[in-house]
Length: 358
Ligand SMILES: [Ca+2]
Ligand SMILES: [Ca+2]
Ligand SMILES: [Ca+2]
Image (tube, rainbow, N blue to C red; front, side):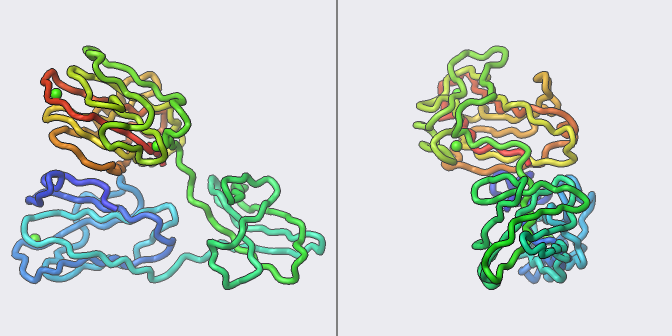
């Protein structure tokens, strides 16, 4: 998915110096060859990009594809772990472009070793586990059945989340014992579950510890409200509820109104991304901004993101951005602030839903 656009890409053009960053999530762990190519055959000024693995902060300083004008470039033997993303940053130079990317898995990482001991009355499983990870033991009487149809086994000590019994890691080796099933043949596999988000709120369960308030000079003409939007997008991005600067009707003049998240503990976190959905309809010179605050409400990173008004997004948009280094290793608060001027040309405002830090 597209992660961000810089320079002219924000405005839909593609002038020299513009960049566009793409993130590919959820790739199977293994070794990869990554190829990028340009379909156009005549490109007099070369074509370059950056390809890397890990997180946005691992971006190389310089291009690393080499010149692939009129052809292609391939980076070989990239190791992608199960927590890694693959990134491609396109570097625009006004002539040519990127026609595509080929992501080729050349060797899948070895699966986790799962041992099973038959104890007559019970079955004892053991596997090598990694700190902080979550596992699920899956079972089926049909080896050929689609893995998504295998049932999650209720292992003693596991935690039910939906239909999945999550087993916390107990490194270096997890041991789980279950009563031996009565059927004559049964198959088991171990699933490594994705890391749960550090923080997430779809706003379907009330205000919680979110705080709506006003900054210095606010006129009081608009406030952040939680509920079903009647103006703007006309609906929440998920479920029934979202936050909006006036859920029914336009915002007023002179707004400086903020919405602050609960405290989010990033004490032991080395990298994290912020994701949320937004709808914005504001006049020129007005709009929203996102800042990262510390636990006392002081800015760690003011104006991490700025959303200038001018026209309406017309739909909910997803945004995902890595949290800056200043925000890591401590407890933070995310602030969404909406600002309007004293000009009567106003819009439906800013709406926020589905905030996730992971
Ligand atoms: Ca070029
Ligand atoms: Ca919602
Ligand atoms: Ca205005």
